[in-house]
Image (cartoon, rainbow, N blue to C red):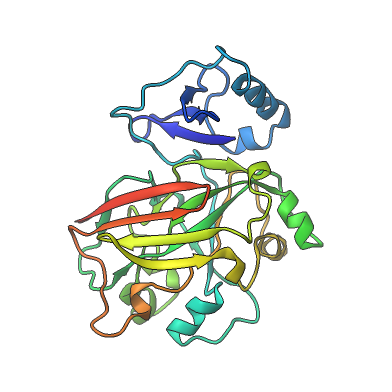
Length: 286
């Protein structure tokens, strides 16, 4: 299923994109797309049944209707740094022996076509297309990558916007360059795991002002999705509704020759993960 949330920011309602590409209202069946829903197999089955039964779910007119983040009440966002061989190479970094972790606050999440704000004082705002993993079952001390995949509810396109000076040159952790407002556009859809048979076979692409900048594949990940979930479960408990941003391929501004083409107000970024939907953001000054 392709689950999504539509409406004004903070007042989104649950919806579904059916197999004919028609937007359907889910608010008569579920209150929201969130961790509670993803952990409830019986309710998810009701949604699937309704989606396959003509006339049950009302159609919505998408004209002028904002698409919000496809997941509400996000618990935590765990991010994996330097998780693609080609991205590590372009930045001159060694291949990490274990996953590099940092966090993004849930309030960085915006919709896939919402405005992204360039922080005040920023000189190095950068782009990163990523595969986002959404947890559907509580994960603690998992033993295998296969178990890790079994705890995934679905996948989404994510934009891990980053301010490199804040991240790298201002001391402390990476978090200060990752948590500026609007720095995690998510969506448009949460695609359930049954529609993504191999999360390690997904092309990712990103354009800036129409120019292709990133063109990678999740096959290049250093730590694949199942292993990332397994690994994280030994350092923290993952709950339904938690999100994992799994890293970005080569092609970010930081990896380009000088002068590096960092983002500025007026730029337009478009990105997609195959089968998970496309995003478009115009940048403005905060």
